[in-house]
Figure 1 (spheres, each protein chain N blue to C red):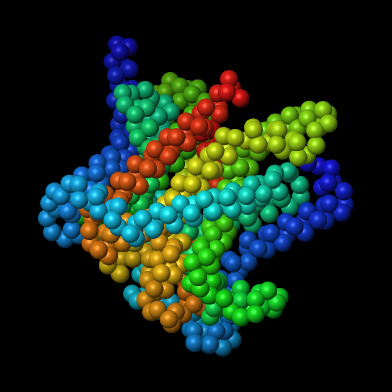
Figure 2: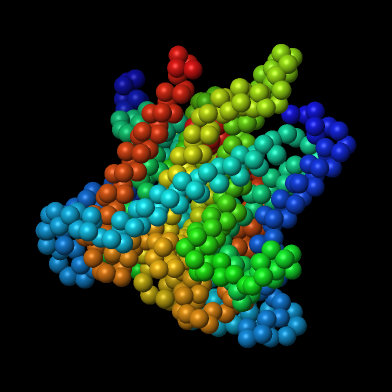
Length: 298
Length: 276
């Protein structure tokens, strides 16, 4: 009698979880297997696929656009992670304490995060334009520039800087919020004890805040690094990969292989390489994170 | 941390810095709104302030109402689909033991580990096989799948936070497990539902890459893809003012919804990252 009741509970649980299992199976696990299968084939956008192992993979190394895109994406990732982390951490420290009006400041910093990233990219496309944008008039009124600058297409460096400005504006508040939850989980009395022991603010920051915040910092860094390695919207919309393909990211190459060159097999092979790299990267990060969590390693 | 900010001079300095930063962050949003209604030579709004750019946008391509409706339909389908899948799944994870439970939860979370652009190429082919290529339903299903790790996680935590005594009392009163869910637990997990729905709406309303790849006919484009197409249509003579009108139409629902439901968003966020 008891065991039949347990069987019934098991079946009920499985029934409630079935919709999730179906969606995860059909729209996640099947595509995951399919992308590997496709990468072994010459798979045109229209027409029958034929096996061509390992041509899709050997061709990746010869694809100069891809090789350039890898270097660009890595450079971009390092720069944007440093800038974005500094901005988000700075903001989190500024809004950490409860005081009048701090909620309004948090909302103001976060609000760009509610807007879609593509929307934000379009906004900046107008904001930084020479025709309509307010930046050139403001900067020349202040005497910082003496002729209008083409921010998004003037030079590779300007295009990169424009994209970084966009990303910091859109994501600083979001990451601030994650860091803030970590900061608020540090008990107040730890700081009080340190103050009694005569530790200054800088010492408290280095000795207490940073070590206790390590898991949160690691989470934020994983999110930033993964997001930047997969950058697409900002370069597709804001800089259109230019000037001269200088801001073409890895994901842009995947989309281009598939829908400009109509070569889905090649796009799948690049996807598999990106996938494998990022999974290894994430596993590595998680291990570093876990090791930091074990008390005997502290 | 307090020595400097407690002095009157320090407090003024703090509020000056913070106000300047807040203006910096709000400026682009305010500017987009202003640029869409201000007079701009050669745009839909030649002289005086008005909504000429929005009128021009309304007549662009298949018309703003078409794109707006496409986005709205996709967003509503994604929100409903995400809730229909994640609420019972959260209930199952929190209250039932069954074979494969932990494996399913891990497989769902693994969606976060896999870079989403790399799944779009096979999804494009798969949707073709299912007859869902170039369809808003297919688009909503894919967007929903990307919401599920977060949604299932939040819903599981929400159900776990409800005391089990509540279910047990209802069971003793003769409620079935489904009645326990609909009559009692749904009220208790409402904050979680609001958070999941808000996240799903913000993500699906604004997503650009997924429809860019999965939708091929212009009359089925959601708003972000349509506005980007407008931007890239004519090189050299882009009507920036109409573009900013498009940005306003895209951004306004998100900003308003966020301001109204801010508490739910932040609460869900805290529970998500703290208990992780």
